[in-house]
Image (cartoon, rainbow, N blue to C red):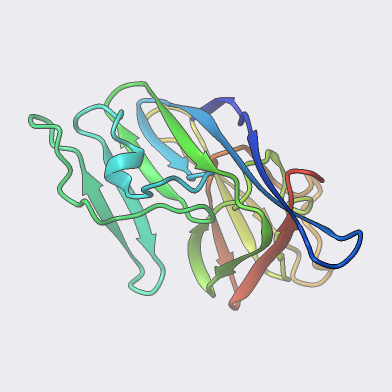
Amino acid sequence: MRTKTLYLAALLGAVSIATSVAQTVYSVNAVGYVNVNLLTGFNLVANPLVAETNTVAVLFDAAPKGTIVYKYDSAAVNYVSATKNKITGTWNNTTMTLVPGEGAFVKVPSDCTITFVGEVMQGSLTNTLPGGFSIASSQVPQADNLDNLGFPKDKGDIVYRWEFTGTNGAYKSYAVNKVTGNWPASGAPTVGVAEAFFVKKNALMNWTRTFSVNQ
């Protein structure tokens, strides 16, 4: 998976003046798009923007026939899937959603480009990460290391990035030291825009962050 275009935010500002003297309140929405190149085989993908409709069938409408999206159900310890019929191009699961902070494996039969269009999440953000395995992503469309993105690492946690090496791909793991609580010598893993990753946590933790496009 390659993300060529990060995001272009068009600031649609609505400004209102409060009744108290010299107090101005700003409400700013930032909308834009992210182009993601999916390579033949498995790609571990996140939805980086809040779209008008966040169902897999709509988000991946441009994917080729035969595409399969797999979301990991942490509670059931299993995958649920949505498949785009190889002949009709219709999806067999039209209710599955993919929202910022989540992630899914997307298996495509041929290279393609998916464009996510929507609003950048802002304000006080919380992404609840369960104990055990889950797929997660940044709720904000930024490419950076997980420390800078506010990821709540804990001793013994392990992050698994999916590195595309062909149709099979491979995981690269980053284990948080059980004694020191530090990342390995290679440092905190860096994730791209629209990139999801597996995480194994010893206990439930909230990934919290306050974000504004004006910062």
